[in-house]
Amino acid sequence: MTFAESSPNDSSEYAPSPIVLGAFSFNRHSPRFNRFWQTVTNWHDGSETIRRRHYGVIETAAGKLVAIHLRPWPKLLAWPEVLPVGPTYHARGQADRCLLYYNQPLSCPNYLALKYIVSTFGTPYATSCAALTTLDAIAELKRSDAILCDAFNQRLSDRLLRRYGWEPHKPQRWHRNYIRRFYGEYPQTELLLAGDQPTAASTAGTQVAS
Image 1 (cartoon, rainbow, N blue to C red):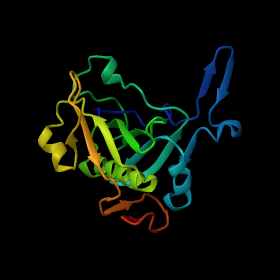
Image 2: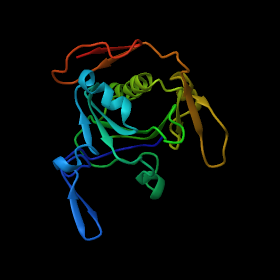
Image 3: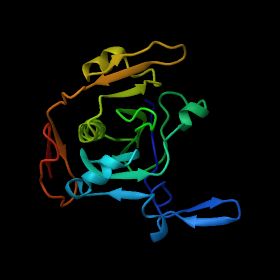
């Protein structure tokens, strides 16, 4: 799990931008590619799509879920893993926005991997918590057995991770592997939705409010 920051302006990952493959250029927001790049802004109507797709990005702001952006491929690397930016790295961008990248590996579909969580400068605790709460809700929706992460940022202490239900898992050199186990028992959580999304119960353990 890596904490950093991301720019939410019009040049961000989720603004319309072309994908260039060799001599061909495709716009991932064109109708032809909508089935590969999808954005769910209504939890009630999009729950089946979220359950079915393997890779996504949770976007939160002001302590609420804004959208879940579904991707055709997994998140593999983050900038802090490539460049020596340090644990306090911040990128430019509008304050109070958090993005959480998750994968559902094809080889282990009963598990989720929290790959990367990024926030802009000035993001409050509630917005980061909303992203983690949404990930719990997705795990329940998919009936996942557990969520795994590599706590790359040393500012994430063992004590803090344990407080939020994460336990050390499979010690490995240069990695801090943690797991959040469910195995059919999911936490009672309240999912706060941004905008005018309707109030609805998504799954047994998750209460959804707007």
